[in-house]
Image (cartoon, rainbow, N blue to C red; front, side):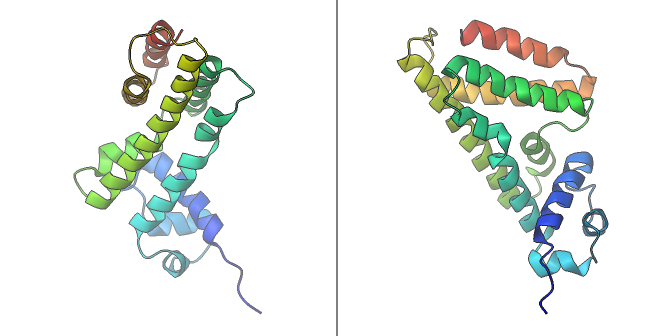
Length: 189
């Protein structure tokens, strides 16, 4: 009888560990212990810790965080606002200790691994493209009045969000996020 695959358990455990302790603060043993499997199981499913982290980022990218940007049951501007509010609530739920996985990995690994830097950059670009798509819908509906191009504004919002999240994590406060929403409302109204 074949052994059951523990790949999903490992990805879930790695996401939890990486989010709590970062890439460098998490060992393979930590991931295996959290998943409830032997350490060797990690290497049965992933060539390296970086490969596992790339899978975690893929899952993080396609989670509800980005899926809600495609939900056309909401008009574009309220949908975009709801997206960032959801992210803010997620940060608040963990008392601003976790931050954003993309921002955390980017900050921690950009000077250590070109592959990880590329992975983070591509996911941030994917997110900015999804935000830009919503802004283009808003522009087409006459709901976006700023003179900024949707792609320029989409990049700015993702970059500003990542900065606000970093500040919220450092200050353990919602204030930087509230500042983000004030500027958001002045640009995307």
